[in-house]
Picture 1: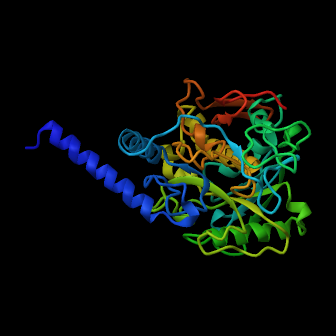
Picture 2: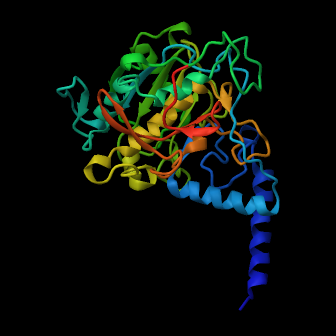
Length: 379
């Protein structure tokens, strides 16, 4: 039997070898992702990816071991401006969110008492829940949306800036629920069992046409959330290669699985939003609320994460990301740096009260306070 010293030495050698292999194997598209437990490793298009809770624990364990052996890390989580992609950095106006219900597996559509679309194949009511979430943002003076308003883009903002100069256009606050712009059920065909990134981008472009957003200007401050039905695995969600809950990107990313997709309507920002309840507590079920009240916690936590990251990094990675190459947080966005923090602890997820209900939300990284903030004044 190996003694403790030998076991420790072998573990250190193994982790160091794995780190070296991961660094060599990383592609140009994911050069900043060297953690093999990250669902973005080898998948550079998975911007702002929400790892499962188990994946995050593995990522943290790997980073802790790596930090003690081969990598000098910084502790700073500061975000910096990426200079924009196609002139786009953040959603520097009132954000508009369109929900795209993707595939005939969702069943028959109807309408509830709140005017929300409901679907017979959505047994837990995730679709009306998300409609209520976006109708509620910017109501009751909720401060969760305030955090994103400190981030900006435009000619006044230098690449690498960590704060916004006077006069730079900032992310808008969705006053009175104005973030919700519409919902479309595309039941023209079944959603693929494992949609590629390119297929998700194509669906978002199709949605843009449906909503009449047929110019670059009409899509400048817009995002499309592509909701896949239960039992499907968009981009490998809920498979060995897809231990994540959601991610976001835009159609022009050449690293997308399936390749970049041409859009006649300008750049299209979209989110890959799987049916996260299929992964139960791994993607947030009952993370904040217990029992029946918390069954859909994961939908608001995960989609809230992606919404905040899209409005602060609309065309990744031209917006705000961690650019410190020797930081454990390198490449991460406003939601990544605060993911899955235990409720009741500093920066932990919590319920946010809106006019449409209480929603479990995670905190967001705030540069100006150097914290994970669940609330922040509107700037």
